[in-house]
Picture 1 (cartoon, rainbow, N blue to C red):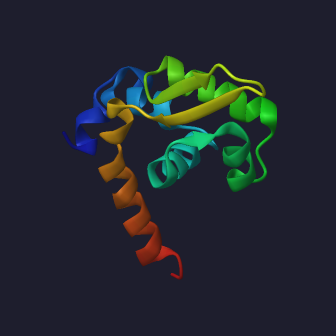
Picture 2: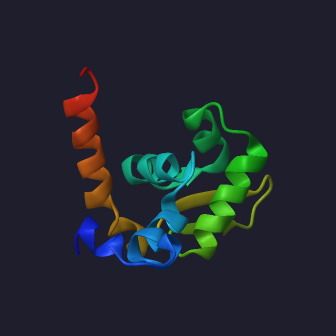
Picture 3: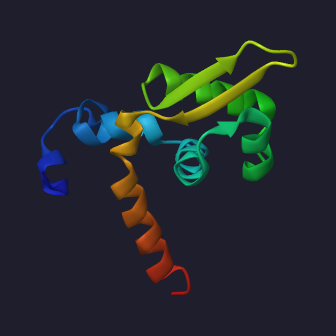
Length: 112
């Protein structure tokens, strides 16, 4: 499929591209995927610390959305204090080649 395939009339969110962007679009989701790909499993507070500027509320809501979309697995351990770890699902792991391509593009074009 090429970008030209999206020139048909209709709503872009109904295309495969629109579906993909609904799962990974926005300011934080790709950063979360990248972090998990490099370090999984990751605990919530560690993720917050590594990402930086994201608020606890935003990180929590992004992770809940990604879990509902089948991209993130949440594992809760029954202990005190509570321990929760996040990792990528198989579905999310199939996105990693795309993330690699984006990293390659950034490396080639960062200083241009």
